[in-house]
Length: 274
Length: 274
Image 1 (cartoon, chains in turn brown, purple):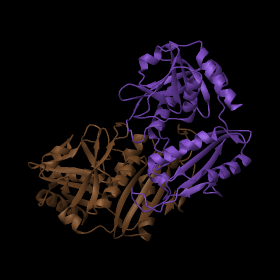
Image 2 (tube, chains in turn cyan, green):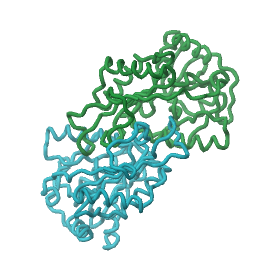
Image 3 (cartoon, chains in turn purple, orange):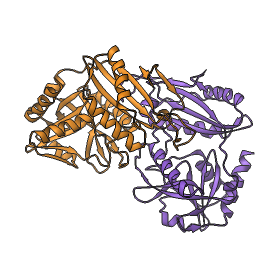
Image 4 (tube, chains in turn brown, yellow):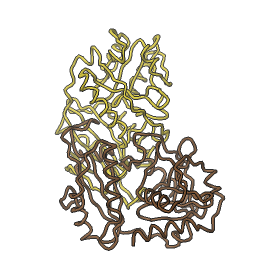
């Protein structure tokens, strides 16, 4: 673990990341000493910092720190947190605040390999995401809604251990995302992903799938999607940087057996990773 | 500063308070080695922990730690943070997670004394609070909306240094609270405070004012309040545990000169403190 370039595993209790969740983060997949899609992660980090008015650390500095992390931990999950740093008491950031850079590592979770090929069973959470256009898309440290949804999912898993992800709707009943993933729907040859202008996190894996669709001439829509429409879709799948892409094989009373378009997209993404 | 009973000023970067804002906090006023309204603060802490499913630390344990903080810092502001603690990677809390207890201290801010007697000028922030009934009222660590509103207020203060607080509306145009305070309105002899069932933080000073009204036979309403209605109120004031009570003397184009009911309420609260 590295904190502002020095080995360590603690931060100040006056860091605004703790006090207010005043920061952003990235979860990267490390493979053979290389962080997958670093440039996309850095672009997203920069955009998220800008949304909060945090000065994004220089890419060269972060790259050098990432290399040190990867030298010790070549395979697994690397987490980067950038907070606004310390400052005077109160919500107003001090002008001279220096962002805090935090690197952490954890081993790759042990997911059943069949989830990627045969799909997962997903749960619809009862928690509804709140609408905050100023924070929508941003992967910031205010993640209590995800925590509450994850608790709900783990309670549902006690009844049904097959459940692998919880899907979240907004107050208007639109499907937005998974507790830790973005969502796609294949419908009549078109790829559809929920509009995230009011809530949700726009992950870089979502961006990669959208780019793939555009590059391969597949019609792409970013718009509101109701649960009912999703239940009638030809295919559904979720993505994030750790799991890659998982088809959904069961949601509510609907079951899916084949995922031809999903498989094609996963194959396309895997080729880029190779 | 005390962390889990030991002197210190840092926490683990794996603490869920940092990772997800998964925790709650209290801001207490210390006077002559005594924390004002500790029992109310503890009740609120317990309620907020329950809302997040965090095991609230025992009152005796916290009291003993508070005494150690007050012995060193008898006057000023004491902050208590309780996070869910550390755990495995991911949003789902581990069953064996032990909450983290963090105590910090800072001197009392140097507010102009006339703000309490003659009132403040307030700004209406353009940021709209999002509606999340599961988190409404709770003083949790997901405070990015307050940070964005405070940044907005500090920008407005560069044009008008008289501005002392920013008021926040929800997406429906209802007045909810200040960036760091709760709001009251006096209208035709009645006391009105915004309904916080969708958003906002229900502070203990708000509870004290409501209790005072009930004890003194003053009609009290907790309901939606539009900005227009507030601008036509007989009196407006804000409260929190640090500032106590400040009347609002100027908001948008409206000015107030006299605050007879507000003064009576402040007097009543001060007598309880004495």
